[in-house]
Amino acid sequence: MIYLNYSNLNEETQTQLLKNSKEEIQERFGDDIRNYAEKHNIDFETMLDEEAQRNLYSYDFVFVI
Image (cartoon, rainbow, N blue to C red):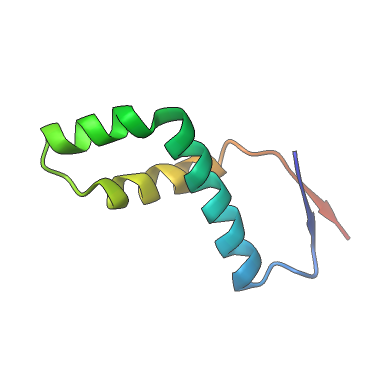
């Protein structure tokens, strides 16, 4: 679960959440994504960014108001 302060959802916080998601995806699926990207001639970083954004939807957020 990720706890967020409702009054602090600025760009910096959003960037940090995306960075954390990207690191998690790279840790868990990095080799698979890299192999798929090479096989289909797709940029690895672009795929990693897209998967990190999708991964954010799997998080449970708790907003502190």
